[in-house]
Length: 458
Image (tube, rainbow, N blue to C red; front, side):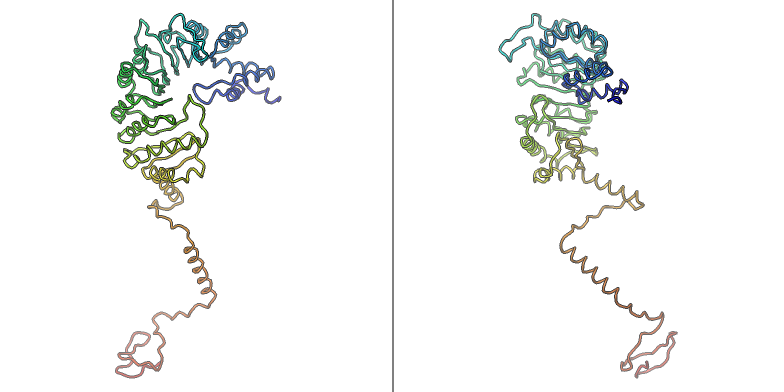
């Protein structure tokens, strides 16, 4: 314990960040109970644990909003720097109060609905419907991550937003009440925006959807690197991508992720066609766990994987690789029994033949056939051999084993006998005296000895 107390403050903060679950992804759910317990262990741990607590502030209930207004909370937050702020279904006036207290943020999340408490039957309406002008607050001028799932109202000023966001999560799309926010984000942050996650409404009004498609293609389509869908996407939006997803119109597109949902196969088919048929620069296609749904059981997860592979696997034979590396990614490791199923084996064969890798979980890899051959060539070259074409190894069978044993026995018996006499060079082989022959007899030097017919002398 004395050694742990003597650690430097940055080391302790790093340890507490892992303990509080603040290093896994961009928008984690902080484990405040663990961090509070760490702060109460001893005096040297108090300040580092509180520093980690203050870096990520999440206000997701009226009780949490009341607690952060307390004197003790204000005193602690004044001693530390807050980098991430989440305002989840708070009133507009409370959101402004939070932004005033936390300047120089690096990440901001806002979930907003003018009606709060719809789930418990006690819906309340915000006195003043919040507009997306809140995103112009001075505390947000330097943010790099923005999560915006809000039913905003349109403000008077609809000019472009210019903060340096490179990771954007946009919910409630298409935005029905504030369609101008599409252009303000996509065009205003075009220079830095590289990753977009879209959370679609199940009901999409056509004017708002048309505006979303138009601003997406005009704004970030040419600079986008990563596109993620957090729920079932709109089919018309994917149809618009079908004509745009190629190396000329989306030259930097690197990865796409799609949620494993039981009712989202129809949009997936359209997206799979766009990936397979177009000569895109895409490198990774991932099927992921739905972020807004509870984790599925292992049996249900495997059933979903088989459904999606059945929709995609048959198109692999016509996959336009365009001389590029490609990989499929899946969220969980596949057990051996699942890999041996005919559907998975057939998918792995097709993917390997097309030069595609398959990654499952964090460590499981199924490399393509071409890449495996290259690795074997590299090993031979490193050992001094030539990088020749690989020959197919003969599978080990019972007949092959029996032949090997017979050859080994024959060689052992032959080695036990005396070696046969070897005739000297240029000597005539011994001929029986009873043998008759015609022609000339030659001596050991090649000269003629006798002519005519008769018996050859020994």
